[in-house]
Length: 594
Image (spheres, rainbow, N blue to C red):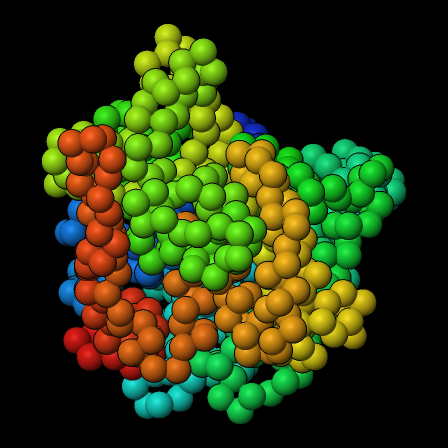
């Protein structure tokens, strides 16, 4: 590009945490003069992190579950409700911003990588320290490109109107796609290969992880201060996730088994790394300890966003009675995915009988840390005020029931996951907790490994030194998000593993649903597993509750909340891009978006 980069590069420098502007420098930079200012060059790698989500309260986070059987938006006019019911218009595209941000990020790192100019920039005078900086930045640039390419592929990859499986337009030069550029989509397989290649290029340069004791040399330039940036082990995790989708039925019609094998290998590398002493003086202990959503340094994180103390998730999930917005509600379908206290599915436990009059008794311990349900009493984070708030979801007078207020969910369930019990807006000083988005967690790698390894050798095969059964066992035995005992004695795990690959695959999928609900991944899981639209177009349910005269409750679990009407298994390519680029083909099923 020969045009002056005044606006875009000035924004980069102002926004990036690594940029400093000398007030005596010219305020007009071109693609040539900018290389004289190392802080500006470093900003090319710093800026893309600003295009990543910071929390789960958006259309690629919890809201996206409202286009699945996990959740329902409270307001039917929201874009996720329209997507789910087949009424999304070209002017309401909630995903264009991600397409645009992905390519902005790719443009930035491509500018850094072009002709190795970023690598050859002199950042500091000390030779060894300069080498550390430029090596790290070069690796990050490749890793960032892989990250945003993977985001494009996961969101927009699909069968186009010509019947070909397509990905996204691969861009390896600093091209500004907001300008008039006509690009075609590359094949899905070529996009996969590009992401894998960029991960491998990144791995050659990056430290395996940003932890002080892992880094030799100056901690100022390669130490744990860079926690939150992409590192070597994250590139292995990205490869595992890419292979997971590429191996799945919708994107692997030929049933190429080697893709499952590669997926298992890379996921196992991440699992092993976290369990080894390399990540701490005592190794990773969260096979037992809980996931802490409010610890931005939680050891179970493989890669996460930068975070801050806020009450966004609490406002989003609590009902109006507790000063929240009740933006969405969990479905009965998701609630039914949680079995009983001993780990058996509903209706199959030899120890605990499911009681439809008391349906939340003796359930899977994880249920209580994820779902707010009828007649549940909470203390608002103050143990001296036990029962200070009770969820009243009965339709004959309950304050939290659907249709009572626009801040109550339409399913009569509210979401507890990501919610801090320390937040109470009635307190004189509100105790807001840190929140961020845990893009890749150790648990994700256990689920990824279990699914892939099962397809290669079955539930109990130890080809990789770890069985699919053992990987799932790690997750079921952990303490719950609210630090309660998990499923420590697990005969059902043994039983389902003995039934073979098909039964265990269904079991892993249910475990994935429980572990990842409201994180924005279930939408893509359902699509990579499915081969027909009928598998996606199923009604979702809530519960209707009546309070009886004796203070008992009657529950109707058959209440249908919403019918799903997907015309495509894929998300649409942004309509504005279709209009702008004649070579760009739309995904099938989006006829009015062509």
